[in-house]
Structures are given as C-alpha cells and as structure tokens.
Image 1 (tube, helix red, strand yellow):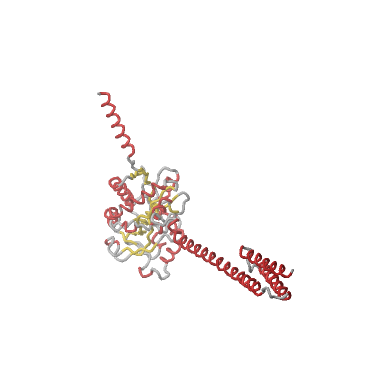
Image 2: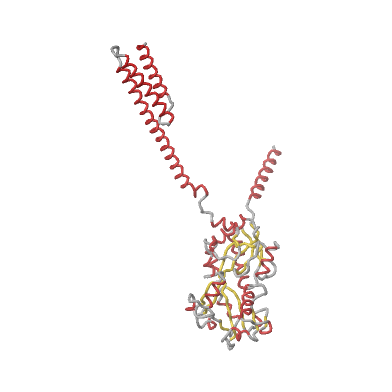
Length: 410
C-alpha cells in the first residue's frame, strides 16, 4: 500500500514538472544600446516595460554603439535588434521592425557667434556632432561637404560636456536637455512659411525622402527658442537582422502596439507616431517578414479574396451550360420538326392512292416518295436533319409506301 502511494506521488510530481516545462519561456532579445543618453533612457524604458507587461525580455549590450556600429553588430549576430536613424544608408541584411519616434535635427550655437552663413558659423568652431558613424555625424559631414569646408576649418569634440561652440544632433524633443547647453540658441533653417514654397528645406526633403520638415514651437527650449525653429526630423527605427525569427518579430510588434498607451505615458508626445500602419513608413531598410505578417493579419485569404470572383464564375458557367443545353434542345426540336414534315407528306401520298388509282397515279406517287427520300438525305448531309431514330422511321415508312405501290403495280 505504501509503494502504491509513493508511485502516485511520483506520477503527480512528474505531471506537474511536465506542465511547468510546457509553459512559454520569455523571448530574449539583445538590443544594441545607442550612444545618445536620451535614446539610452528610452531603451531602458522599453526593457523595463516589457519585463513587467510581456513575455519579451530585452538584454542591453554592454557599451553604447553608434548607428553604424549597431548595424555591424546586427550583421555579426552580436545583437538582435537596434535603434537606428532612418537617415542611415541602406544595408543588406537589415530589416525594419517598426518606426518608433521622430528625432529632430537640433543645430545649436553659442550666443555671440556669427550666424550670417553656415561657413561663418562653423569656421574656427568646436563642434559636437555625435559619435562617428551616427546619423548626426553623417548629416554634419554632408553639410560641411556642401559648404566646401575642411577639417582645418573647425574641430570635433567628443562630448557636449566639453562646451562646444556648435552642436548638431538628431534627438527627440527633450526640453530638459537644454540645461546641458547654457548660453545657446537653436539655429533655424528658414522661416516656417518657407515650407512648401520651393525653399532649401523643400530641397532637403525632396532629395532625402526620409526627412520631413519640422517646426519647434516658440519656448519649447526656453530662451534657446525665442522664435519658431524650422528644421527637419527623421524617424528612429527599431531594426533587426533579416534572419530573426518571423514569429518573434510578429509577437514583438504586437507587444509594442499593445503597450502603446504605456509608452505614451512614459514619454508624452514622443510615441505619437507608433501606429498600426507601420508598413506605410518611408523606411530605408526593407520590412521584416514578421512585420508584414502582423500588418496583413486581417487581410483576406486567397479563398476570401477570390471567393466572389469564383461565385460569379460558377454562376456564369452554370448559365452557359444551361444556355447550351437549351440551345441543343431547341436545335434538336427544330430538326425533329423538319422530319415531321416528311412523315406528313409520306402519309399524305400513301392515303392519296387507293384501289381505284391508275398505274400512272401510282407511278407518280412512287416518284414523289423517292423525291422525299432524296431531299431528306440532302438535308441529312447538310446537317439540317439528324441521323437519329426519327430519320430511320421516316426511311422505313417511305420504303413501306414504295413497296405497297410497287406491289399493287405488279
């Protein structure tokens, strides 16, 4: 009895252990941590929110990476996902998971510098333009190339704490960060009224479809924005390796959209761009299959898409078949009506000959019967009559009449 009780306990524990093993394990994803502190804070917010509200866990990489370095890490399989600017050049093997939030180009200068032109603003300046390989640095390098400036005309500094004369940074709108740059103003790329009137800002957005004109309102950064600032913005993308499992990305997109209200509460105004219509974004990279599967989850199946066409096709087919059968029946009936005329004529000729009929009358009647047969065979050849049972009956009837006439004549 004791052995049986022990066996039951073992079986129970085995079942419990099996059920525990069947529980869905959290999905672990390695996120390449970005360079900018504000992006790092957002990444940490992501991680903490996913831990508390979902089965997805984000593991942040050890050291911050520029956008280029993050893409390299993805391709080297040292990370699974990363936050990079949509202004980065296309890279094969990198796919978009979702556009998350806009990053705005902030061009700041120390009060007192000459802002009459870009050349004068930068000549002799110490410039903070983000880390090498970042979207900010790439944008700044494009600007100095167009201004025909060289590395001797200015100097880079590695950190905003080194008090630059000019900073050029793509970053989310963060009013609190202006405290890091006391005595600075933001440079406007024109007047807000210039947008849509063929100005330089229109040329920038035309030649760079990922960019869009953006206006920082008066007072957003306190004294640094005494007037509206016209600049450009570009989306920060969540990207992944192209070979990252489709089901994992599907679940990740679902969780991000489900947690959209919480994200918006953590960063008011920042996540307004997170939308179900993620596949319509102007992404530099191709869209991940998991993202496409999620956005097309409610799309009709092949059967549903073509069921209406199939129903119409079946209806038309049935109608054609019915029309064909009806046409065949009408055609047969018309041919049947033609042979009936021959029956009538043959019977009329037989009835026209009696016992008192002369030999000439009988000979004439026989000739009429033979003429009927000849006409019937001609119509048969022309397919005006069918070689069916009705035709055979007529031939048999006409031959009987001929025999009767010949017998009487003999």
